[in-house]
Length: 131
Picture 1: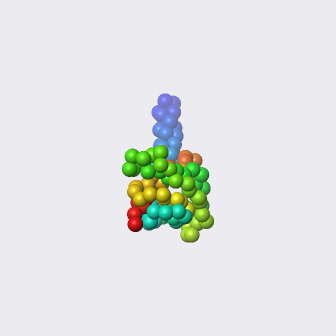
Picture 2: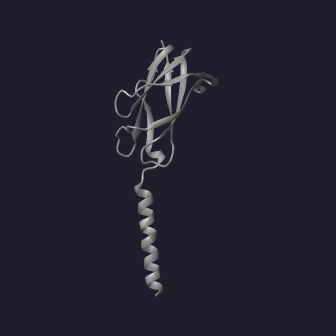
Picture 3: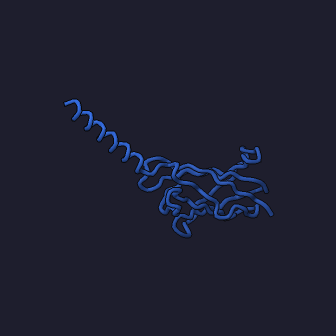
């Protein structure tokens, strides 16, 4: 009887591990800059791509619900810029209008919900404002 219970427990454990490992996780996604260098100024267009690291494919239909653009890479985190989301230009590409008042390195921090993914996907993209 204990052998049967042991076999059932082992089978259940393996099934659970396979089910958990088979799902994507928030760490399986990454945001990438489409164009990492842009001119400083107002109404600058920046685009980011959300990619599934496992498949290498862009992720369409994500809901980006939180953004922050600041100069923390240049040790000026208090220098933040407004971000306005725009309509997607193609699947997996997310566009934003921003005001980059000065040249330098800007950290674009994003949080998104990906369809079918229970965890929030978070990422950071480096944008350089240069003339």
